[in-house]
Amino acid sequence: MSLLEVKDLVVRFGDAVAVDGISLTLQPGERLGIIGESGSGKTLTALAITDLLPEGASRSGTILLDGAPMPTSERAMARLRGQRIGMVFQEPMTALNPLMRINDQIAEAIELNSQHVSAQLDTPQLLTEVGLEQKHGDRYAHQLSGGQRQRAMIAMALASQPDLLIADEPTSALDLITQRLVLALIADICARRRMALLFISHDLKAVAQVCTRVAVMHSGRIVETGSVEQVLRAPQQDYTRRLVSASRFAPAATELRPLGETLLQVKGVTRDYHRRNALFWPIAPLRPVNDVSLSIASGEVVALVGPSGCGKTTLAKVIVGLDSASAGSIAFAGQSYRGRDLPKALRRDISLVFQDPFSSFDPRMSIGASLSEPLHLEPALDRALTPARLAEAVSAVGLDPAMLDRYPHEFSGGQRQRLAIARALVTRPRLLVLDEPVSALDVSVRGEVLELLARLQAQFGLTYLIISHDLDMVAAMADRVLVMEAGRIVEQGRPGEIFAHPLHRLTQELVAARLPELDAPSDPDATPAG
Figure 1: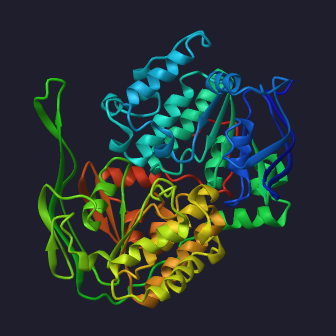
Figure 2: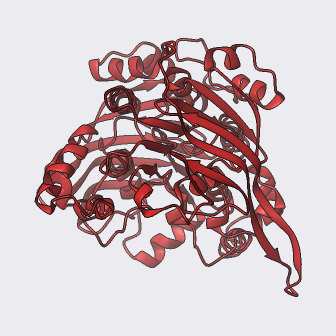
Figure 3: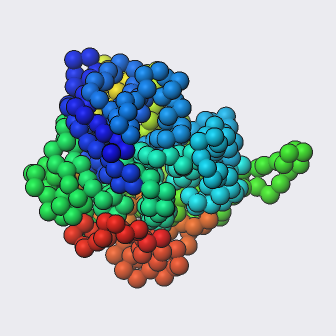
């Protein structure tokens, strides 16, 4: 008997059909990957299975767990989700409780399901299992990096030792080293506990590493299914061929382009977060950025890489004026500042694309209202020109301006990421800081967005600081790469040189952790190397 059986599942938003009559089965211990472009219905399928569809959505069809229909009451369904079905959401910042420490959230998940499991796990064990240190458990969600939050979500999902784990983009926010470890962890747990896995991802290489079977979704339908070898290495459908072709990303060597004068100068920047113990006595500060110096020339593309929690995003926030340095200084176009004191006249010249596109949008505001907010930094702009400026930005990232009246929850993760890029571009900045700009995008859209960024950079002479875990993307776009570890820059150079002949230990580990290309032979039943 199948563990999970879905028959003729349909999800509608009013008259619009988002999932159109799909059927699938999942056996105990089987690992099924669902791939497809943003908006194809992958996440909605997972939400329909767990009865977590957003407001306004309706579901029809049959969903069976161990041959029995899913319960109809919310109370019984909530118990089932906690005990037999674990869920790793795409955006952990919005799924974690901001008022509870990570330890408490994991302990709550363990306690709620203590009667269901035979051998109970404890919080330290789960933190260790997902590669987090014990100190991370004492922090709140906003005090962790994107990758650390994702690992905390995985620990919570595993607390009940479920029969079925549904993972929606579980590695999109992870650095290469952690991604490799998490994929190995998921595959190992599935094998040891005979836990089934429904793995939703844009990363075809990750799917190939951890899954045994693949289903391809397009426009709400499953258009191809089969083993990893059949679908990803010998696809039959044109749509699948396009996805596989787009994932075989061959970076083009970047040519040396003429650069202008120094636009951004960072000197000895340190950021301390002061902490107190239970008795309110000061203890050693947390220092995510430690004496960092760098410079970026006008028109240059610089990439900042490193493991989750190394300080990349904190440094970016200081540069764009969302946080302040504890020591050191920054100069942009010759004007000095320490962070939040960034002059208002310069704020429209520096834009940030946030790593988590959902939490960076106000859910109560339409997308059009959110995108128009940065234009208040241009008091001289004729307000009659605002709609044209918004339409220009949205069209540039491949979306229909008619979507401006919608709200953030009405878009897929990839669409929200494109809208975040559009919002950053709307003021036509001189420096664009991009924090994981393509991590939430499917493989086909990723290429389009990278081409868009390259075109905008060439057309307007934009300067980019790109924070990314994607070494292929960095190799294709960057003039220079900075490698960061524990708040410090430990190595820098041109991508071709630094990736071919890495000198620092961390750079060597990052290069070694890259997943093999799809055309390389692999055993889908094997656990990825950790």
